Figure 1: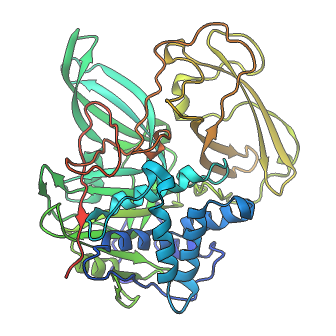
Figure 2 (figure 1 turned 60 degrees about the horizontal axis):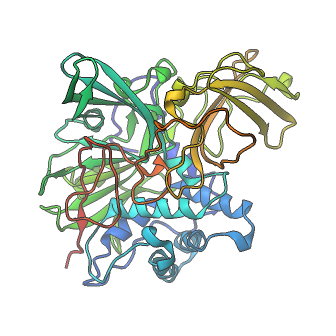
Length: 521
């Protein structure tokens, strides 16, 4: 591709990352990128841009295909069935996907989905990012199986530390699962904007200063990076839209300053840009959405509702067409860096070479180490035994298609101040958990790694020795659902006047951009 910027050595592969990802999509695209109709007065540009992004996310297409293959036909949720219908029609039907799209559009507005139903009326303006969040939340809500959860692809774990600006006391909070990072303006580059978005200020109590409501700086760090990363450029400042230009490159390396210490020294965490959604307009109240996407060929294409440019553009040309001052949503997929031995794909973690023959035996292992989420529940000596706040973890790990199985029996410590093991939010039936596994062969140096977000169902096996602590922290940041924190976004809330979904951000949360779209006449 022409006009490629220069990047530091040992950072990211320069060619073929997206094309390679498309090779793993079982559906063989026979049609090129195309647009969607936006009849006059309907203002559907936000929907068209959001769906175009999804349709150019090969990991999402692979997830749909895997889910359908592992789920009995009569158990496939209707929204997944119709989503897959749009995927097939978009990439293989010469006549286009409009009929399948109308079927999906009707399903998304079905009243049986309650708060997750997409509520709109003819001509109503909406935010493209709100559309993205709604589809992810609805699909996650309807797919109850623990395998290949969609949120496992699109969820990162982020820690939060509040630092008193007077005495510098640090107060760490429980990690959250987030679906996007916020990029604050003004900033020279997207990296600088993300760093700025990971910091904010709030008023909080300080035990050292013995003062209530004292200024604190909120510092967020990435604990577990996601395979698909959405970045929302915060163009909202009160009722005014920020139109600062932002420099975006095809490769993004997460700055060390926003990584948890456990991730440092393990090689660069890199992503490749594959889609940009633009909001064209001078205000946040109205405007028009377009999308630039990278197709199976690796070339950029600009889509403007039904209008599509030839698939010969570079990113620079697409950014010029869309406008650097209009870039609103950036979509990245994680790629393997030269200094990392394996890519972290939730559904297909890859080894750099065949595994050691010694691994082909069944045995017992201690718990995998290096899980930063469990910082408050560090493992004690493995095996059985009674300790204060003890939690016994039993797990079995199997490598599919291989005669390899490990059994883990590990004693963990649960701080009584953290509350009971089971502390679900009202009406919640499961506890969401994020697991990160890294297997390293001491003999060959080969590595298998990956992460998955799953649901844990509570059940009682014996009467507890003591009552659950009243200080159990069961809060979450779900964006309009009754699920756990995986629907949250870093310090994100909707601007005043947008009531599409209920959001309960933490105290001190700063609002981020929510731009509404209106079709050009």
